[in-house]
Length: 283
Image (cartoon, rainbow, N blue to C red; front, side):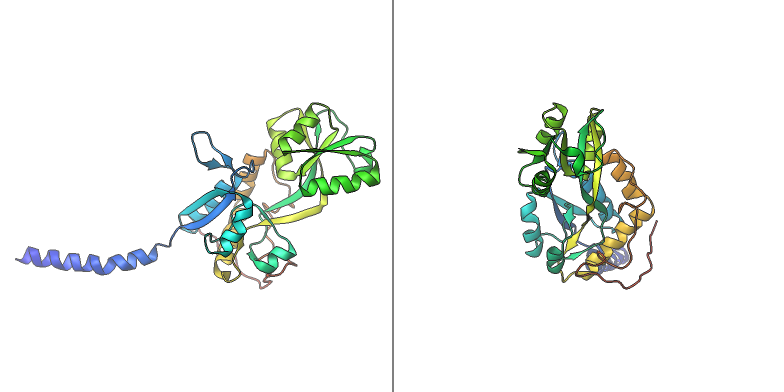
């Protein structure tokens, strides 16, 4: 009789405790990436996706003591999906612009995005647009790189070859059809790490912009928690190690993979909160 009573009491305690335990466990973070944007996110042999963004935000979720689900979809569906409540934030590299910052809240940047030239090994380094006079530059169709290259080509007397993909534009350089290709810095550096005949050359510093994680405007708490976690990963060198792993190059001293900017968000952009805060990083 006594045993049955103790069992009943124990069962009652468990029943009372279960809802509390369930409440302590936060639901998984929901996010998405463009699963064809190597080396940030790309198909993995045997299924699934891998890349810098996958490593980065899997570690972020782990430090936030959350599970995470990462969908591989078209980039064009990510922002509408987040605004509709399907995603909590966007894990795909998202360039911070004034227009976007007016519609969403951003963490501070975790990487720079910039325009960069790639050339064939043995080719003299490019010091400026004038060095391309009389030559050909390959670009990926429909990108900002095509727009800028064509504008500068008219000014500086070089031709622009347009290809359907960045790998095709890179191949044009390797085959000698083009003198250089203009693309995104991480893509150019990644291609150089995979092909010893291809060299990452001049980065156009004036085109630099922050790649950061956006959340909905009404979710300040999540933005701040994501940024604190990313900043702790900068502080302990985790993001720098991931960048070196996926891009084949150690970040420079002024790289956003290591630089912690003040406040929350991107300085100078809408949604930026300059209030100083102490960074508390757990073990």
